[in-house]
Image 1 (cartoon, one colour):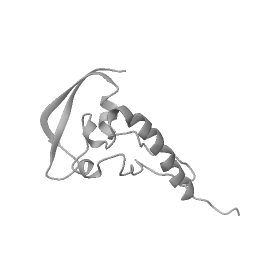
Image 2: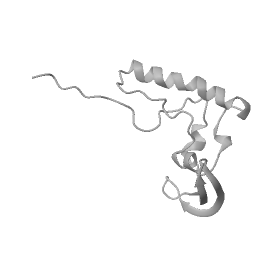
Image 3: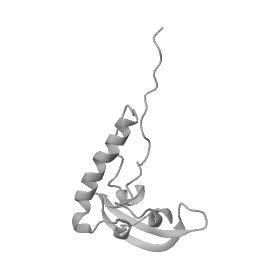
Image 4: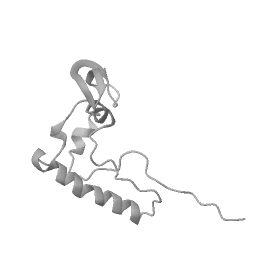
Length: 116
């Protein structure tokens, strides 16, 4: 009988480096709309900074022996606004909706249009 192996991977986002993201701001709730203020790097340099952070996440996973590595979703602000950015028409809404943290509220989106 052959020995069984367990293939490993990382599920969800790999922690973004502290020099890239304001972790304290992100911990207050999941951004539902673009939140440029959460990035510690000025917008003019943000894409390059994300490009430089991605291989760091990949190397960490390789060093840990992860079998199936990913880019760590380093570029993503949140699961929700990544979807919202793909829509051709959307309007930020200030209606209160439950956020991830108990007892907090966050902005939502009124969505319409087609996926772009």
